Image 1 (cartoon, helix red, strand yellow):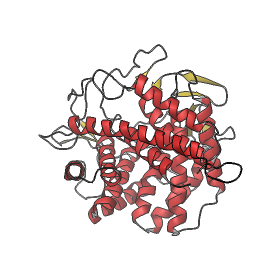
Image 2 (cartoon, helix red, strand yellow):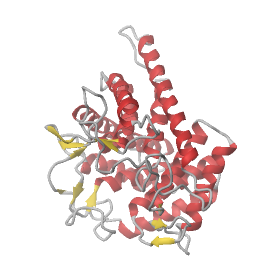
Image 3 (cartoon, helix red, strand yellow):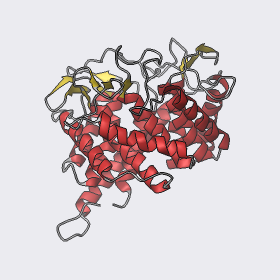
Image 4 (cartoon, rainbow, N blue to C red):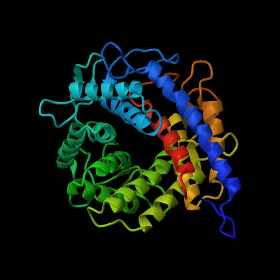
Length: 409
């Protein structure tokens, strides 16, 4: 809790924290209802693959593993943190069954990338990024609903893709032979690694498997010592030996997200004590990276965060992506609570202003994918749901940020 010079609790700051938390909870409640009304596919199960601006199912109707897993994580966590009701449990269990029954291969280990609306496999590719989200969601669902089979499936899936792509010489995953994903010539990239770390944080909460905790520890350390550069940004792509590949670019949203994901990984590694603890310097470096992007990418005039720029120099992409705004919230809370960003609460308030007044569709509900500086929509248009745009960034950011603001310091 913020304190005064005398060491007493600063009640003014505390009241402001609570007010911001209440504001986020109101948005989260409205958005949860948005997805609960529009997302579930009553005919075939799971959630609809695409929603148009009105929130109605749209073409194409395919369903993606990343998307379905993100919804499963969201409503499992919503059940745990906000609404323990039969309705939410039914939604979570339906998503779980749809993933297990339709995305899983015959050996019960790997998961495919895409199915039709009815659940027939249409893309059999196995790729670390979507499989990491399966691990994340199944671990979380299994913990919350005491489903041991879900946790076991998460564990076997992780060990399968870890065998497939782990690169022992320099550490991390060699994604050269994965389905097309990164720039030709690159071998490793930050985004997949942080989401594997995110998944292993959830899996590490529910298992003391040494392999899981060793890899989680390694990925947290790699994020800080290899992905993070001297200017306190995470380079996007690398050669096999972690030589940066391509021009320096900073994704403000990813770096803010990464900063708090590293703190969560450190918490699990050190609290479970399966492997050697991570040093606290990891936390300091993660906060420094979060602070850098929280400063570089912020729109001081209208609030919210831009997409991408040259580290420590200038913004290059001024589109405001929906997910960036919501990942900024928990990052700013952690920066605030750590005392390393003095105006973090101001930035939270202005980001919420943008979310409510710029990103929100006041006519039909839901949040726009991206908004340009002239208030027109970005190149993805006005659709509200698709393979990438699920419920997880928004709901996670709102839930975690509001909960952390109300926790004792």
